Length: 312
Image (tube, rainbow, N blue to C red):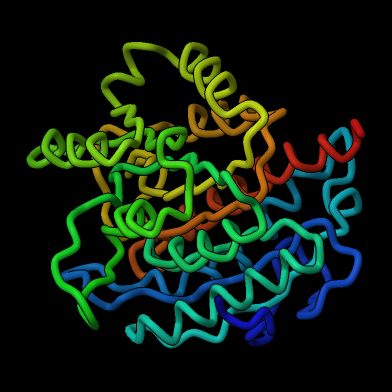
């Protein structure tokens, strides 16, 4: 177990222009950036720049919220806690910084709402959230399962593709009630999906999602996850590249923006205890549209939490 002392840095500009507060007191939700990537991708290194780009383009999201039926920021007493003090490419110390920062948010009683960063940032967050919420389940929307084999041990054991393999091995989540939704690809999807299922995960590939339809999927998710603490992990490459081109590993055939937002709104009522939106890569993001959409994803996910507070 690591210390729960936060390790964060300040930022220029905040998400939705909310107050910057590295030590939240009465916040119900706290924004945290994790500007980290493993630096291992052969062609698309840039997710380390994602959090600040999402903050910048969240101004567009704030404008779109002007006619909302309730005040999300006020309801959640939302603050921006800055960025975890990570160093891209240095995996183990960065994992400690992320875990400690998330643990500090949880200790304050708030829900962590994080921006990545590549998919590797999820594992240290899961370690912190699982200590606070035993029986933690994961709802992971992604073009990939991120439950790929661990290629090595020691310094080479972590990458952005084996997060959920480690989570299963460490027994920090309820694998049997956790789901990967939206997987797809042209070459190695079937054997990778089979490996995730062998670990105990439920996998809903994109072609199955299309056959079932969104209403059926949402009914299944609400039934499967009702009454359980849910870690919502949203990799932006679950969207089709036509909606979110600025990601580390774009895969054609994904969700439209409208479909993704419909899913988020359909999760209302679930006990979401952490929100993790990752894999925005600004160098590959024309006009910042992926960052803009990521900000909207965060707001839609937080809206479900805010409504739970309003209905108490």
